[in-house]
Structures are given as structure tokens and as C-alpha cells.
Length: 137
Length: 428
Image 1: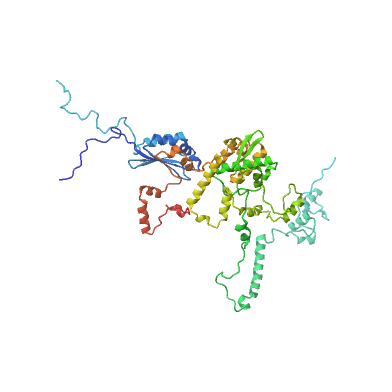
Image 2: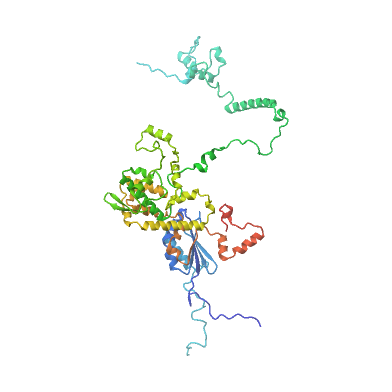
């Protein structure tokens, strides 16, 4: 007797039952000296506390990266990571980038051509001759 | 009509002024003039050997023996001349070397040294540093080396400075005397200072007195009257006094050593430091915890002292320039904290000055500034690192670094990261 896997009754869809944020960690890197980090340093001083308090499920680390441009790196539960260079950006723009990384799924960018995407082949299902009202001739 | 005199051109210097003795019958006068002006040939036989450059130089200098090189275009250049001179020197040296005698010729027992043991040392500074910078002749600046950081100790120092300044004023002594010396004990602990119309009013509690405060500010002098410092000594008197006094002018405090041997009830911070410096115990081998404990005790005692004062002393005005200058100078001398000009200008009360003194300087690093933010540090999902996070840090966080380190050790490979190699001295 071969071992058989339990047949999957349902397909997990994030957000149908529960929603798990895909972003698990955000790394904020800055430089103390470089001018391109001015906005990042301002963000860390003034905005990070509020942003981190609003997103307690995301771990946030702040560490210097001397002589480099500032960067935000997002780590996702699918094992991938995304990095955005935020050189010469203002703190409001950096907040937008941080929110973008927080909301991202971690998947590679794909071209979306259809307005609706679903794992079902059709919302109406497969046609059956035994169902429905039938047609009286 | 006036005739315009023709200015001679430089080439005309070479022109033969002498008109040919035999004018050609078939040339007109103008043609002869024209022809002679472009003629560079000399009619004089002695000029035939002299070149055109030489003649030009002679004309310029106005003498037959002009200085400098005869013809820069004919003779050898500076480079060639140098080479020639070097060759000549070399040849001379070679001749001399042949004549040189070696040490072996002079002394058959001579053996050349193979190492530097026993050889005379030439060059360097000799014993200059030892003679001038040995521990007994340390430079003593106006500000103490150790800068006070404890807020309570700074408060006590400022209070002391203010009491001393106003005590001098009450005694009618010039305020410049305030920083002459630092007494080993603080006589201002039991002195209350409160604002008044005239500036400040001093209340001496317990055993303290105005005389004691003033005495503590007077530098100790010799026993004889000759060395006693007069109020306004003339220049010659000063010289005589300096010659006769036993006090070292560079180290006036050394005369206080006699008094320092006596036990004082409550030693001040500076006294404790002096005692610590002179103690035979190596400060490096002291227990760190004990040092910390003693610092805490000091701070606590300073807090007790400062709490015993009437808080009205914070409002004492130091607006008067002379008082302000004396207070600042004394405070700097007691605490070692430098006070910038904007603070000097803006602080007109003791409180304003104290606010600057006890305010820690702004952190230079962003990580330090963030670590001081309670709203950020208290968040459980935020971690702040003071230095760059290396791959080693990441491995350590995952708990893999121990395994990796063991394997690297086993293989004889370097197992600390590049920061250690660069001399940071930090093991990761």
C-alpha cells in the first residue's frame, strides 16, 4: 500500500480566512556622513517610531552602512527579499517606499493583463446537463 | 621745419658708422646709407674673431669685458657643465680612495661589529624627553584633565564658584583672585546664597565663615615675611620676591604640600583625584565595580549637599560682566567643561548656566541618538545596531556561527572577520 497524501480539500488563499502579512522584516540602512542619507536619517528620527508602532508584525532593524547610499530591504515569508535605494529622498517619500515594501507579496513582478484573477477556472463552474432548470421544448 | 630724429634700432648698433672711405662713384648717397645699414661685416681686423653675440653683449653692458657666459649658444649647457664637474670630482675621489687606508691597516686587532651591542648610539633626542617630560614635570593646564560629567557634582562646583566670587566681592578683594588656587576642601558646602538687590547675599551656616572662604582662595605662601605677597608690589619687588621665595613659580601649588598632609574632613572631588593620583595603588588594577560604586557615592553625597541649599540660589543673577567672567572662569577651572560664547552671552542666572553645564552633548551618531529615544527603544519589533551588520552577525543571529567557527578552526582557516584584520581588535 502506497502512502497517499491527504487530499487537499481547499486551496489556501491569503486573506480568505485569515490574512498574513507577507513582509516579515524591514532593514533600514543609512550612513551617518553622506548627504544622500539626509532624508533617511530624518525618517529614522521622526517617522520610524510611528511606522513601527503601526506595524507590530513586521520586524524592523536599523543599522549603519557607512559610505553607501541608504536602502530599505524587505524580507518576505516566501524567502525572497526586495531592496529599494532611497538616496536623496525626503522622509515622506521614504515612508511611501517602506509602505510599498510592507504591502508587497515578495513575488517577482508580473505583468497583470486581466482585471480579475482567480484560481477557479470560471466563476460559474463547469456546465452540467443535469443541473439547472433545463429547457422545455 | 623740424626734422624728426630717427631712433636707432638695435641692429644699428652693429652697423658700421664709418662711411666707406672710398665712396663708389656709381652709388647715390641714400643707396650707400641703405647698404651700410644692413652690413654686418666689420672693417676692423681685430673684430673679426669676436662673434656677433659677443659684440652685442659688449654693447649692451657698455664694456669690453661683460659678465656672464660668453655665448650661451656655443658653449656647453648647465647640464653638461654639471656632468663635467661631477666627472672631475669622481676622478679626484678615485685618486683619493686609492690613498685611503683601512682600519685593518692601522689596527691589526680590529674586528668589525656584527650587531649593535656596545656600539655608541648616534642621533635621536637622547635624554631630552626624560629630562623634560618625566612624570615629575607634567604640564598642568588651567582646566583639569578630567571633565566632570555628573550633574550633581557640576551643580556643587557651580555653587562653590558663585559663593567664592560673591565672598571675594563681600571681602573687597578683586575677583581675579578667585582662580588663583583650588583648596583641597570645599568651604562653601554650608553657605547659602540667595538673590538680593546688590547681587547675592551669603549666609554662613554652621562652622563656615567668610574668612574661611577667602582664606581658601588665597594661595599658601612661605612662612617668612620676605616671601609674603604684597598687595601691589612694584616690578623690582616682585623680582626680589621671586628670587627669594622657595615657591617654584611654575608649580605654585607645590608649597601647599605641607597642608595637604593634614587630614581633611570632607575631601572634594579634586582632592580625591589628587589623592588617587598619588596613591601607590595602580589605578588600572582597581576593581571597576568599586570605582563605579565610589562614583555613585560621590554623586549621592553631592546630591544631598545640593538639596540642602535653598533653591533660590538658581535665580542669583550673574549679569554683571565682572561677576559673570569670574564665575565662568572658576566653574571651568573646577569642572573642566568649556563654555562656548553663545552660552556665556545668553546665561544671566545660575540656572541658565547650569542647564548648559549639565546638558550632555548631542550624540554624533544617529544610532546613539535613536537609542536614547524611549518611544523607539521600547518597541519590541525595532532593533537598532551601532555598527554595520556583517554576514557574521547574520550567522550568529541564526545560531550557525559557532558551528562555522569550529569548522574553520579545524581547517586552520581565519575565523574572524575583516574588521579584526584591519586592527579593530574586536572579536566577532
